Amino acid sequence: MKKSILLVALGLVAIAANAQKLKEADVPAEVKAAFAKQYQNTKAKGWEKEDGNYEVEFDSNKNEMTLVIDPQGSILETETEIKVSDLSKAITDYCAKNYAGKKIKEASRIVDAKGVITYEAEIEKMDVLFDANGKFIKESKD
Image (tube, one colour):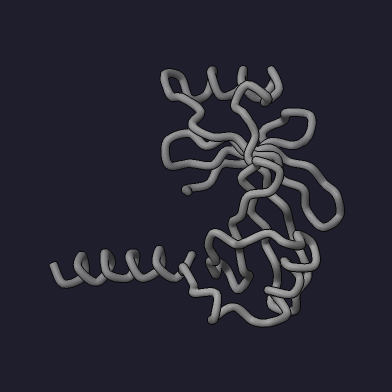
C-alpha cells in the first residue's frame, strides 16, 4: 500500500515538473529578449518551463503560436496552430485508421531551428507527430 501511494506521488511530481507555468518576471532576460526580437510588439499570453527550456504562448496574425526558447535565448522551435482540415490526407488517413472513432481536436505545424517541418495532431490526451510528408514519427502523452 505504501509503495502504491509513493508511486502515485512520484508520478504527480513528475507530471508537475514536466511543465511549469511561470510568471513573466521569472523568465530570464535572454529568453524574453529572444521572443521580443522575433515577434516585436507581440504580447505573451503565458510562459511555461519544460525540460529546461522556456515556452511562450502568443497570438500573431490571428494565429495561436508557441515558441520554445533555450535558457541562452536561442529559438528551438516555432509551433503554429492550423486547421485540422489543413492536415495532409496521409495524416488524416493514418489517424482514422490507427485512432478509429477518435477525433483530432487540434493540429499544428512545427518548424525547428534547422527549418525541419513536422505536424502534430492532438487526439484525446495524446500528441501524434508526423514528418512533412505525413509519415508517422511518434506519439506522446500531452
